[in-house]
Amino acid sequence: MYTAWFFSYENALPSLTKRRADAEWVKTPYSNLIRYKPSGNYFGRVRVNGKLIRRSLETRVLTVAKLKLSDFLQDHRRLAVNKGQSVNGDVIIETSGAGQAKDCANLFRFLAFSGLRIDEARHVLWNDLDFDKGLLHARITKNGKDREIPLNSSLRQLFEQMRLERPKESPDKSVMQVFECQKSIDRAARLVGAKRITHHDLRHLFATRCIEAGVDIPTVSRWLGHQDGGALCMKTYGHLRDEHGQREALKVSF
Image: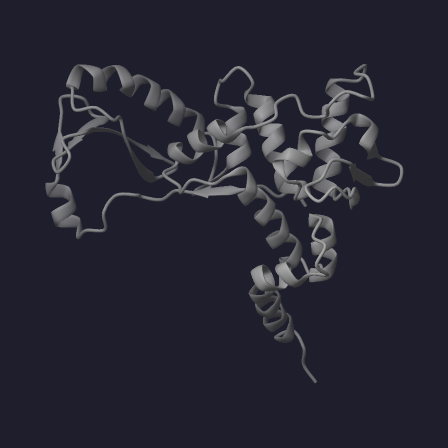
């Protein structure tokens, strides 16, 4: 099943009663532009799928705020095509309009679907993919020991699509065409008011999804390249296993 990091729409502003909060906002002649009294900064505001989103334009000057407002509105019109109150982070990145937006989105997906570290993902070549056996060979790793990771359905679909788009590329070429996407991730998080996440957080996402799907912790640990027999994974993700077990136990009856 296709999985991706979801950015929840969050209001990162101080938690206040509605009356007090409303009193701290000052309207301007422009419907999508407001000023926050305590700081004096201007904010853009827009509703996407029924959810009010405010984002600081990082200026106290009205004329500058007006210029920044158009970019803010253009960014959020792209989000309006998504349904519900959460948006796929990779979709936001890919539709951002940046020069290498699609490549950044593919790297985002690669990290989330494989659990590789960013430095490991940079070194994966087309030669390292065995579609017949369904394996990814990670040669350059943190601990210097290579490992094989099964191609789950999302990872296989990603690679197959990329190969269709670049069919004549040499087998010794890098699969990824960009080697970091932090700025794109940061921008996507800002668009929806979510907390900042990093490349490494996508590795945690992979581990969490695997454990929630019922994969045992020693296996997840091997996929991640740990050499401790699962001790670190147990410490970090053991609570997920326990919660999963409790949910599964509810299905048992006599």
